[in-house]
Image (cartoon, rainbow, N blue to C red):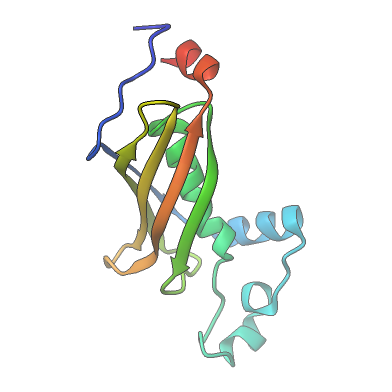
Length: 144
């Protein structure tokens, strides 16, 4: 169906799963300059309330970027607004799953509202909230 954008409905969902690594922490730190000791200093992080290294929130929420930009709504999508709560730490070696569920679709423009959740391998919600996404019609048509 090349050239015709996928029709999105309330209730549609998509998810991606990934194991987070120490390399992800280092790459994010290099990219952003976020060298918070909670992410980079094992001795200091061990003395914190987290009891060890935790992954930057941007690495955790980044998996939602991949779902939105690749799966649902799909290529050409960008976040207009997010409202996320970080509920639990993610650690190197954790396998996390990001899921989006469509809660509303605008009929007058390519805007979709999503419920967003990231869980760890034990099912603990580590991030939840909502997002509003706009999808570029030209990119959507060219990649459908």
